[in-house]
Length: 504
Image 1 (cartoon, rainbow, N blue to C red):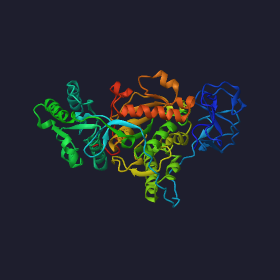
Image 2: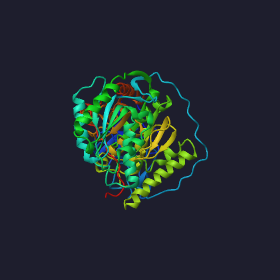
Image 3: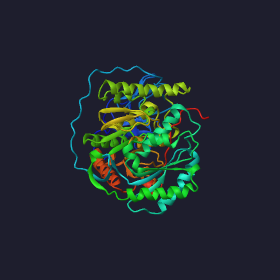
Image 4: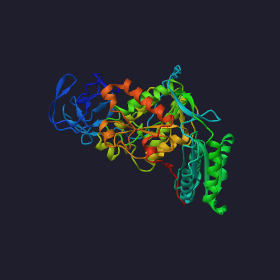
């Protein structure tokens, strides 16, 4: 897939066609009806086309596949004339349900690791993992003590413990009235967060009578990490807030002795996520993040791609890069399992894009997915992780989680991402436990929301992918070394847990 068409970097075309086989081009600005320059000629545009929306660059027959990124993004519901606008009024998804896939039978060769000169200042933990922050995290086992956790964290943060980057509570409404796999998933996510290398210390706050019992949660934390975890049981304490604050101080006294050490980019674990996408996301921000995923994995580091419902229609691009048959089968099972999850709840698998995506010019889930999977670059898919699993290998892993921003970014953090690259065409103030770098797909958003946005991927169109990649790598290394993200400056740090079972 060629994300950027060949043109002089300083000359941004009015219309951009990503792949030579594409039937459509994307408007870089509002385009009025009339003759418009396109690939060295003039295209008769038949109607006004809004910025980010598509125009047909060739006639498309009714029921024919509509091509973008060199792949079908849907089918024409009527004949579309050359120069006409192309969107939800004349294109429909081709997605239906579960599909059969066939492994090629040829394992993908392991790429050669190429050491990179790029480094960052990270916290090397006793188990060898490297954190990008040295924080104390306060995690409630159950929603009943969420406010208690917040009060403890506020006291700890106000104390300004030396050597600690911050004390933060990550609250949720779950942990009780859950059963079976649903309860286990909540416990698994919290255990993953408790083991995160960005947390120099962790305080678990329990109530006492909840389903998510503290002892069972502690049992999921490896013994060699338990010395950095403390617990407070609210129903057994005379003053749970004072007790919790004292335990935070105890943790901070030890964790605060950690110092930043120069390490290579191969020690980085990047989470890959997009939210509020627009038609530019698949042209600028997502291919740019794909370059970062390649740079990290080629150097021996780790990248994690998630939001499985947003690979529907583009899943074969990932399957073709599966390391072996086992990984291929894992991708198939995950994709079809998510489709079955939708169908079992009476929902079509194509219940996406969102209203914001549509307003930004994305027409079908296939189009959204073909743009979204570019965040994984060209790296081999080394592993398939279920929701709550912790990362097991370097290279690119595919993680089970839905498209919801907060749920998927929480899953990325619990899996082990120490920095999250979050591309967006619409913007969001949300932040998550791991430093979250917001990457705007276009300069208009970056200029309009500087308090939300960390990086402008519109540079891809102006300066080309190579220059834009270097600039983003510089920013990632600075953030990994301690520079606050916009979300961190705004104190935007949230988690959300994927609840799938009954509530008692």
